[in-house]
Image (cartoon, rainbow, N blue to C red; front, side, top):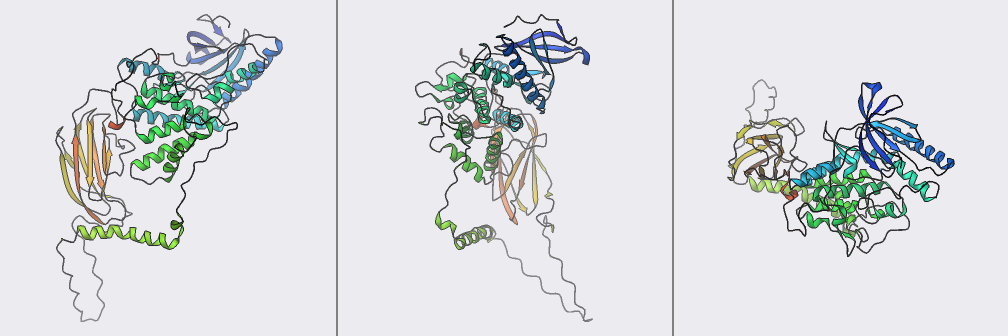
Amino acid sequence: MQPPIPLGTMLQKRYRVTKILGQGGFGRTYLAQDTACFDELCVLKEFTPNERGRDSLRKARELFKREAEALYAINHPQIPRFRANFEEAKRLFLIQEYAEGKTYAKILGERIRESRTFTEQEAITFLQNMLPVLENIHAQGIIHRDISPDNIICRESDQLPVLIDFGVVKAGVTNLEAEGEVGEQGTTVGKAGYAPNEQLQTGEAYANSDLYALAVTTVVMMTGRKPESLIDKSSMSWKWQQWLPTISPWFAKVLMRMMSYRPAARYQSAKEVAQALRSVAELVSGGDSPELIAALDASDSPGSGTTGSGGSAPNRYTTYSPKRRQRSPILNSPWILAGAGGLVALIPFVLLKMMFSDAPSIPPKPPNPPIASGKTPAPDKPAVSPGQTNAPISAAPQVLAAEQVTITPGQLLTRQGTLQANQVMVYRLAGLQQNQTLTANVNGGVKMSIVAPNGQPVDFRATDVVDWNGTLLVAGDYTVKVTLPDGIPAGAYNLILNAAPPSSGAISPNPAATISPVAAPTPLVPSNTIPPSNPNK
């Protein structure tokens, strides 16, 4: 490799090199100033192919140009924008937008020194923000090939993950090297532990190869450990869950399917993973999600496990389709289905009859006396009970008077009430503190939603539920909204609230997602934890 470019060097009479950001087997990455654009910062990526004859250099240039065109075609706000490419002094250069922020590897290193890592909720949010990026590039036939905490920046301006250091150019060079056309500059693109087996052994990479690396990255962020320390050496299978004993089973299943040893057993697209996460949110919040059941069952199907589960990599990678549950022949009868549906429809009315059977009966209103004129009297307007409206259920909800309550930590707070259809009862929980654990439960056939101070649900589990608990991310006034499900005309409820004193540990939106200290073979900061790295490498 050629020596680094001296700092202060002006390239193309425009780009002034100010700092070396990183170095790899294919070149270096520099921070530069665009003097033709008010000294705006940009990233200058150097590609220095070894010279093995004029023909090899020409092919390397063609490859570099082709891949530069591919980068130029990418248009996504979480990918640094391509700005230019040129050749100077037998070195090839790419100019890209500079994303100011820290890599997730550096952020993780800082957290490890504070004896904490990324929470489950943070990991879910990270995945949800990364999947649209992969969906965008995969739709254009571009595979990143080198996803890891080093190559994702948490952008300072909006805290969104930004994908950097595309391996497309390096992958092309590797293909030429495999044919003996370019000098020995390295081997397969991808980091050991993050890249799947098919990529490391054959150099082939697919959309689900990136998904594999993204899942490993997520697990590393939650455990704070290097991938090689999360593998059982005797069976060569993933054993990362022992470091996350409180992780939600459904989230663990999604990650394990993404990290499957067999490409055919993984999700085949970023869109499938995003749908699985959305379906999980619906299921947790009380919705019915056949897609989730099928997806999670498919991850448990024979041969879909990780390395060491008895499966081997297939000779050809086929499109994976989750197995559907077979319906019983009895359920295929329309008469049985109709009868069952009728019974289910009667259940709410039977329950309401039982609930209000002890209420005093109201004598019927006597009919209006006849009018001598012979005109037909106008029909009486239906009586309206206090708090009841004549609006249809589909009308805008009627918000009753909000009640402000103060929760004393460690003491239960209860509230009772009765709702008519389309009514909402609002309770404002005043003065809750950051890191407090809130528990809410409601019964009587009603639902509730927990709203944060910013007016948005606390998390994806906090809408139309009967119970919720979690750790509050910010201080302020929270709101509990109690409503009736659609189709229920009235109902009495009992709301129970409890708040624990603020915890001093890491923020965790969900106690089930809290990474609590567990007995481990090595300390939290062993030699195999993630070291800091330079951004925009």
